[in-house]
Length: 182
Image (cartoon, rainbow, N blue to C red; front, side, top):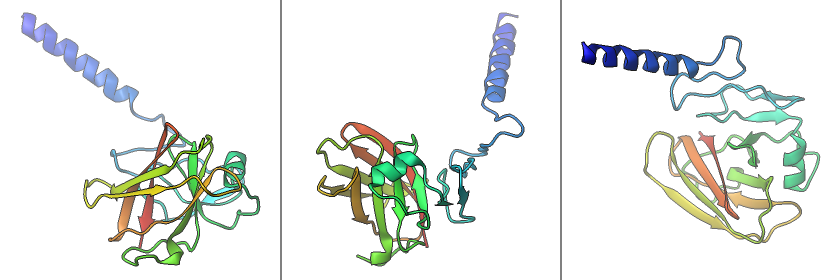
């Protein structure tokens, strides 16, 4: 009888935990698997570029959040598609959108990384791999030598098409996002 009570109690705890992680009906965010796309409410004045994002990172076009404009050091980039990392302390302007895989030093793969938190003279370390896989793994280090704003200009090439998870590390800060390469 003792084991039966433990089993019932554990089952109830599991059921409550599973229900607590289910987003409420009408929620602006949905998640069905760890690697599914999160559909978030776009920043005011912007829209999600359909079928352009991947993983949990939508691609936006239109009005850019004020913090990203300030971090990027320039206004008037509303026509450039952009992504926002998790947590929202970094983002990237995707010049030459869509990004293309397998083209070393392709200028269409330019991404202007913009940080909401100060760089404090530190390099940006970028680590990337295909979403859901550990290889191939890429690492790149960019110096803190660009201005205006808190930016790191980059031409970020990947060897194969698909969704790539990108980790950004600078000055003790960490953010993650996914970008799609055709």
